[in-house]
Length: 59
Image (tube, rainbow, N blue to C red):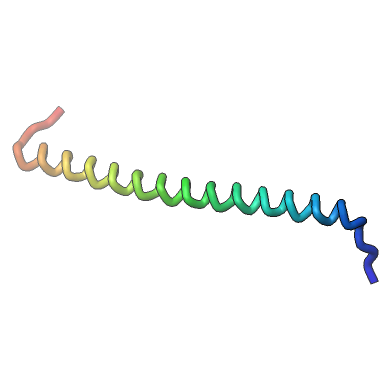
């Protein structure tokens, strides 16, 4: 059997894990939003490039 830390220490550890899980959730949401914004930006850049090409503009 593994010895368990005192109850107060267990509560502190659980609170820390909860805090870190919340942080992970926030980071995942930020990453998803950044990916979405990156994809939108890439689409805008491609659209702009195609528009310039159709109009015969360079540089």
